[in-house]
Length: 248
Image (cartoon, rainbow, N blue to C red):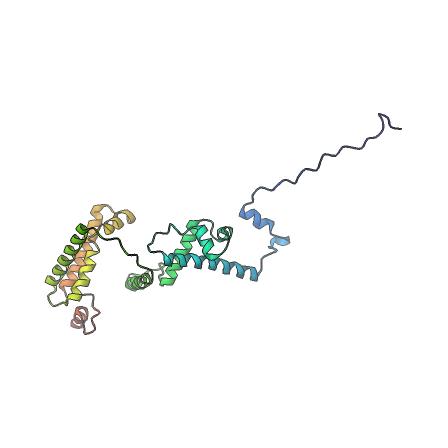
């Protein structure tokens, strides 16, 4: 007989949905994947090899994209674009490169390796070979067709070119025209706005120090021209070869 004293079944609260775990950090995910003894259940040589292959596939796709760019503007080198090129998910790219900066840094290191350029332990006597390898590598990239130059700037460029060649030819009367043109082109490197910006912005030199450095290089090149020590490379023995023969 039911009465007020009768034992009633305890009311159980309705089952609540399991609480969704908060997004875990990489360290937490790694810790959760560990088993007894702190070892990862999934860690194996095969998985490491597969991960390395995937990372290289992504990096190769990004590098191929850079090789196709008409300029060195890497604005199109995004995580999304690289994922499409490598035919992987964006999350896969993020697994190996946490942001676009890290991806681009890895691409730049890959380009340096392809060019054979090693900045670690660079020696002054090797710098010419480094630049040569870099120029040869850059020649493999597509060259964008520059927009038509303003006639005023085109005219001053041509006048400056003729003036420099004439100045070199006056100082080295025995040089062939091709040799004088090479020396004049090297002098012209310092006579333009990008050189000024490179020295004052990238190197953070004030205009006075930049001018002093450029004058030193120009004076050194001028002394070499007057001494007959040119770029060389002439099959029949250019000025540089003749100079070295005379100094022996």
